[in-house]
Length: 585
Image 1 (cartoon, rainbow, N blue to C red):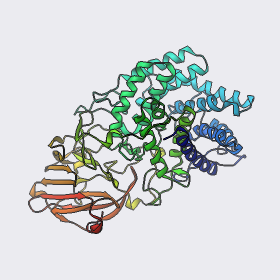
Image 2: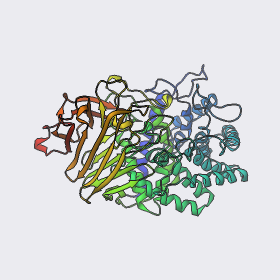
Image 3: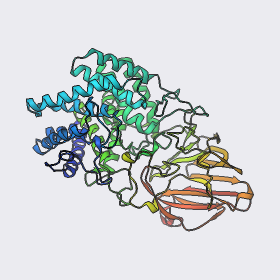
Image 4: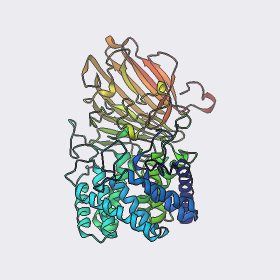
């Protein structure tokens, strides 16, 4: 891939996105509360962080010479005053008091000024710099290690303080950047995964798991911020460590460029290509790709997924959003437009197309910090999860459930996302326009018609073990069906074995025969991918169509009843072309 060709393609998508932002910009000069903001077609509201788009809009103005982008950026900057507080901090939304997002606004404003400030007149530039200076003071005084926050905020402020320390020649800012970065670098598991996307950052679950959002905030916010801090500060040791951490996290990038965040603490924001309100990985990976093409390859594959999920100029929240009639939330576009602009301004290198770690993975990998196994055989990839870390009291998928099943010819076959379809952050998520079809994509054993529901996905104490050869790795899970509150069902013990081979996935399970008529195995398979062959047990009804909002797939939901002995067995496979409709998913 030549540098020129890559830059042209990235710029083309950036322009498409910025054109959509222009269409969504509100024009009401008589109402400063709204004039210049971006109206979200999915949420029917204004997202308070939309003023961060001043940077990609200025980049688009530079690339095209089109004054419309420049004027849009100016109007958006003026509207940003509505989110600015007297102390220099920025609110997340009109009705929110969280001001930690000031760090993202400051980085965007810095980059707009640093790379494209000459597009502004002297008076305008002074006004932009005054706001940046006020934000810098707020960040220095408030976003410290004493402020309760998720780790990505400390990493982002390490980056912001380094940037602003250089822009304003402020050594105190540089010192704060170093302090925050050092704290973040102390939050790394033995497998090289950053933890701290929970409170407190050092929390450990009963199983010894950590608060890790590996395919979300880690790769789209924390690692990019730490890499940029290290590059700005000349901190070679931190930069070398970041390279090693990126390699560890690349085990969670699928061959199609998706980030596997099926086990992340903040999986409720999983969008398959990344995370709803984070910034993205491209700029950091392209920068590292100047020395190692595997990083540029990862950036490019993820960028291609951006393109595949873009419709009418806006980045949708998952591969099937448009197919299900879900409007795109503008938050994805204005956040990730920043990373495209950063990639262009930072320079995209020429790079040979190379293999990713997930192209040739190990048959079996275990992550005790997530109590999760990664399995691979032939064209198949899979995760089995026993993770028990609760995010804000919300149950994570656990119990030895399959949270991801992926096949090279079709992509994701199972992508669980959440144990329940829940809006943990209503302002940062979007509900489905078809709520009657909105369901979890998690395959699980659960009770039929009971209140409460007792399910495998709620069992935090499940025990996972693995064996098998390199061609057919196997994971076994034992546990007890539990309520969302963690109450076990009497005699609700279960055992499930997953055997992955080149021909697909074989699932064998058992429950107490006394429960055989009270439970079923719920199996949501993504449409137009794999098929299911029932070997033991019975199909309760025809599969129903449902939509898994997170990470955004249409599924066919099968319900399999155990036989009288409490046993069930089925195979998930890719049928031959002539038998494609035999067991449609």
